[in-house]
Image (cartoon, rainbow, N blue to C red; front, side, top):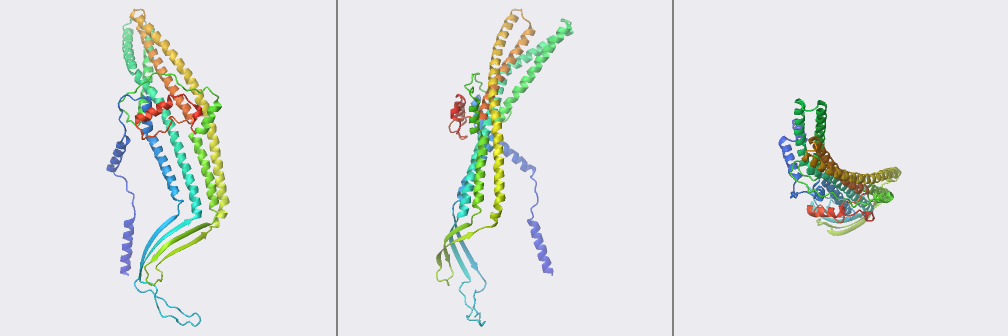
Length: 497
């Protein structure tokens, strides 16, 4: 009894020792994890050497953006899974080896079933210890058919991952074009806004001093002060809106916020985008090329394959096998031999299960079709909106350019007047502020126009580059490929197939 208690206690102690308890990460482990993440964020990145152009910003975003990196990894994982599924179609070739032993001799005897008398003295035909080896080839025809279907589905899932990557590319390029021009506007106008702010501050101090000394009419002084405060407030709002753009651009390029770099600001040029065509042509291009609709088409194909798999599962499985065998038992007349055969099995319950599964597959098909129709309608609306937005932004940009040109000439006249003691300091500050506002609106209008162009490309599902592009390319090579694609006029006939 005492021995049983000792055994029970020992078993309980062993089992309790095997139990896994939750163990929280230590502070040192979290510090190491955080440091590893920080060091990996910008690892193996080409340093910024010189002003960053628009196309270099795009290239850096495609090469180093973390969201895009995740999508590329998912695509590589899906491709690897598709390749792995191909191996499931192959037959199996299994090598086996074994050893068996026992403490005494095996043996047996026989008995007459009529008389019940033992008819054979105990004898043995097997050694106490034996070694066996086997090399068996087997092929299940039903498993081959199902594996073929699963491999096709995995290939379609890899293509879905590719379409999702295309979608991320379009979004990143669209975001880069938007924030680049806003950041460029901030860089271009920063010194002018700082000079104007200082001049407003000085003029505001002088206006208040004159009001205290009763050198001007109180109402006129207050009106002038209100105008200066309004200009000061507008400057603060402009700088707030524009300065955040560079932080956003840094994040898109995976550059640490606060990193010092300048932008290479090109001249404003008219675009080569020609979309004054029948909107039906644009819609046709979009419905053929949008990643979301392509994904739904692949989902439908996967669902069709699932219906094929359900039919295959109804069939009986046939397994063909053959093998080479060896046994060390010396009592065997033939220690090595070739074996072959065939087996069949049929799970009859799958026949009764098939109608329910077929209904589920049909319902899933209807859901995918409904989603595709809803996406198609949304895409049609996006194409119309992006087209109208582009045409509107093109008009806004032209108006902003005309306003900027007129304001530049007005400021030139005011400066001449002030230099000749004909104009007032108040008028000069007002027109300088109007000039800064005109320049900002001109830059922002151009930025919005570029964003509208990117939105047209995204709504049509066109890739922002032509030819094979790889993130293994250098930043310079990738930027050149993007430049070639964006500087060409849009050719709808060459939509992605």
